[in-house]
Image (cartoon, rainbow, N blue to C red; front, side, top):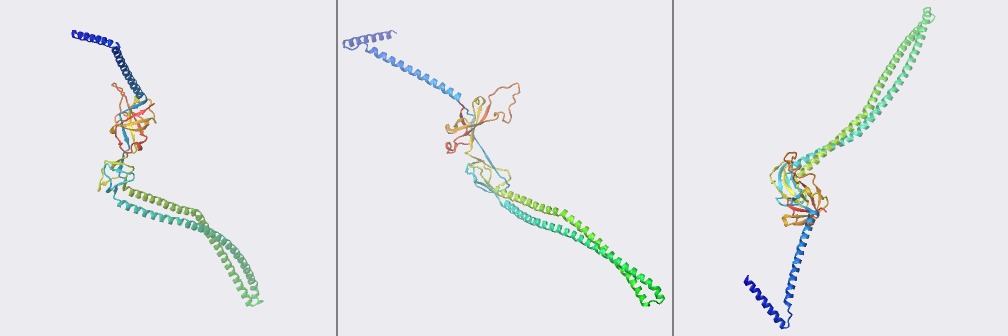
Amino acid sequence: MADEQNRSGTRSANQTADQSAETKGNFPANAGAEDEIDDSAESNGNRKFAVIGVVLLLVLGAVFFYWRSTFTEDTDDAQVDGNLYQISSRVSGQVVKVTVDDNQTVQAGQLLAEIDPTDYQVALDQAQANLASAQAEFAQATVNVPITQVSVGTMVSTTASDVKGSTDLIAQAEKQVEAASARVDEAKANARKAQADVDRYTPLVEKDVISKQQYDAAVAAAAASKAAVAEAEAAVLAQQNAVASARQRLAEAEAQSAQSVKNGPDQVRMQQSRAEAAQATIQQAQARVDQARLNLGYTRITAPVAGIVNKKNVEVGANLAAGQDLMTIIPLTDLWVTANFKETQLTHMRAGQKVTIKVDAYGGRKFSGSVTQVGGATGSMLSLFPPENATGNYVKVVQRLPVRIDFTNLQQEDGDYVLRPGLSVTPVVEVK
C-alpha cells in the first residue's frame, strides 16, 4: 500500500511538473483532463448501446416466442405417409416371366410378371364356341316364332271354315231329308192308288169283266208302289243319318276351332318363350366369354401406379394361388404427412391452414402444405388395447390426435423425388 501511495504521489508530482512545463510553454493546462472526460463519455455510450442491444434482443426473442407460441403450432411426432399398393395374383397358375427387381422404378401399366396363359386361352376358346352355339339356337327359335304364328292363324281359319262347311252340310242334308220325306209321301200315295186299283180289279177279273193281264198289271203296279215306298223311306233314313253325321262333323269342327283359338296364342307364347330362353342363354354364354377374357388378361400382372417396387417375392416357375401377394409398389407422388398434435394444440387448428414442413433426413429441407383434416379419434382410442379410464388409479395424460397435412406443390418442390413414406418431419402450422 505504501509503494502504491508513493507511486501515486510520484505520478501526481510528475503530472504537476508536466502541467507547469506546459504552462510555461504556452500549452493549455486542462488538455489531459478533457481527454479523460471524452474517454469516459465514450465508454459510457458504448455501455449504453450494449444494454440497449441486449434489451432489444430480449424483446425480439420474447416477441418471436410469443408469435411462435400464439400464431403457429408444431410437433416432431410426424412422418410422411403414402399409399402402399399390394400387388397380388387374381388367377392361379405358373409364373413364366418376371420383369422387375426390388427397388426398381416402374410406370403405371408396366408389365411386372406373367402367368402361363395357355389354360385360360383354351377356356376362352371354349366359351366363344358355346356363345356361337347359343346364338345359333336363338336364331332358330326367333325364326320359329313367325312360323308358329302363321301356322296357328292358318289352323284357326281352317277350323272356322270346317265349322262353316259342316253347318252348310247340315242344312243341305236337312233339305234332302225333307225331299226324301216328300218322295215317301208320294210313293205311299201311289201305293195306295195301286192297291185300290187291285182291289177294284179283283171282282172284275173274277167276273171276267177285265182281262187277266190288266189285273196282273195292277197287281204289279201295286207291288212296285210298295217297293217305291220302302225305297223312299230308306232314302229318308239315309238322309237323316247324313244329317246326324253332318251334325257330328260340325261338333268336331267347333271343338277343334275352339281348341285352336284357345291353344293358338299359347303355342305362340311358348315359342316366344323359347326364343327368350335362347337369348338368355346367349347372355350367359357372353358372360362366360367375358370372364374367360378377363382371366386371360389377369395372366399379365401390371403396375396400377407409378412407383418403386419393394418386397418382391415372386420368381419364374413359382405356382401362384389367386390372391397371393407378389410385391409392393410405393408411389412417390401421392404423399401426405400424418402429424400427431397434442390436444392442447388444436384450439385454433382448422382445415386449409398453411403448413411449413421440415424434413429431418435432408437437413431440414422445407416443403409447403396445408391442413386437410383432423382425425376422428385420438391415437390411444385407435390402438389395439384402448385405455380404460374408469379405474381408481387414473392419471390424466395429454392425448394426441392425427392430423392429415397434404403437400401443396409436391411436384415442383420434390422434383428429385426425395420424399419417402415413413420419413420424420416437423410441420409448423400457421393457426392465426
